[in-house]
Amino acid sequence: MENEAVSRNFIEQMIEKDLAEGHCKTVKTRFPPEPNGYLHIGHAKSILLNYGLAQKYGGQFNFRFDDTNPTKEDTEFVESIKADVQWLGADWEDRLFFASDYFEEMYEAAVGLIRKGKAYVSDLSAEEIRQYRGTLTEPGREDPYASRSVEENLALFEGMKNGEFADGSKVLRARIDMASSNINMRDPVLYRVARMTHHNTGDRWCIYPMYDFAHPLEDAIEGITHSICTLEFEDHRPLYDWVVIETGYKNTPEDAPRQIEFAKLYLTNVVTGKRYIKKLVEEGIVDGWDDPRLVSIAALKRRGFTPESIRNFVELCGVSKSNSSVDYAMLEYCIREDLKMKCPRMMAALDPVKVVIDNYPEGQVEYLEVPNNLENPELGSRQVPFSRELYIDREDFMEVPPRKYFRLFPGNEVRLMNAYFVTCVSFQKDEEGNITEIHCTYDPASKGGNSPDGRKVKGTIHWVSAAHALPVEVRLYENIVDEERGVYNEDGSLNLNPNSRTILKNCFVEPNLAGAKAYDSFQFVRQGFFCVDARDSAEDALVFNRIVSLKSSYKLPNQ
Image (cartoon, rainbow, N blue to C red):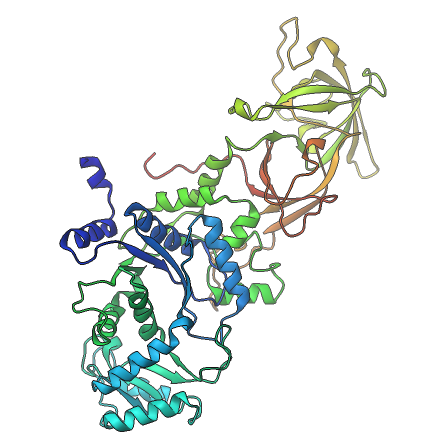
């Protein structure tokens, strides 16, 4: 039990204290994204943290869209976010909500504040409100419209709702403290006039609540006990508490709902800003929000990352109160660890060159038993065709090899994986000097990869039978930004890597890969882990994305 106590993060400690002291009887959390873009890896931390807390304490997890700003929101984003949350394994059951579901309650809550003298209608423009607000070192000034009577404010606010005033001409402000050391408490705006068509409510409303007013009310209406959010909302917590107390949903800041802040998940050398990704999409630099070079959840899924790998990554990152960055290599470590025991290990020639075994009978085909994964015998084995003509990777042959090169070269004997020993006897070139064909002889007694006379070979290479090979397209990915020069240029633009995607058109894989479906993952021997592309792949024209290479020098911080 002592170890269990030590392992609890600070949020869990606070929740357990709240339960023990009776501030809440059960735990209810939520994930509240704004539907104005696709989710990225940082959001995965929030999703899994909130869902995990609800699971740990036998509570409930709500999924709610904070859709209070129709100018940037779209049903495309709503659907993509739903798919991402579901894919990560966070089950909201029947608790899918929208902030717009509560617009009527929010309006009534605002009317209640006006009746209490806690809110007033102002005619100041957005720029004037900024000027009156003051600075970090100077207090704000009283709004000249703050002295309006309750009756006048009620009439004006109803007029705002009824469309009697132009967009931006009036706002509803909270009456708190213009001299507060916390700028967020200097009579913040609660509502603005804005004629915008909403994806959920259409044109029913022409006033919309501000986030800092709507969000705490959403939590209160749903009975959320712990509002887990990121550190930038720490200065907003007094306003969060003010809203739910003044509207009558709780009595003290310690009561539920209670806001708790944690550090965001930052990855080194990646692009997560929606503005930048939108620009990349619009300019055709990437082929959508799910381009495998991005770290949106949809992109990671398309690239071939698994929910398990992302859950493990988030767990390794932990929960803290201080911002820090995590190396992207840790994410790659997690997907390698997840796939290495799951994936069948297949043979593929990504830069193929033909090998002809001169003394192998023409027209003969034999099927070799090949284990799917030597580290995981439970994955079984498969039959792989072997014939006189094969494809190997071009890098597995050299005309004039350097020292310690143990693969194929004139006069050298190597092992064809799970097949036979072969010896290179000759090769052919084209006019440009490129190797076009390699000729070998084989030792029939070495079937299975070992020779009865006990002789050893140092090199083993993979191969694909030419007559049975399946042509595929393979895409190799690097970081979309130049890591050595950093993510951003001095002018704020992205420092793009021109080699972030390499498309290999004439690749061959073994025929057992025929029929592979979207998101199916495999290890290509010596090449890395690959996934069938969900967008561009077709049954008769497979496209594979390289998820990650096989090896890395990365080690976990504690190793």
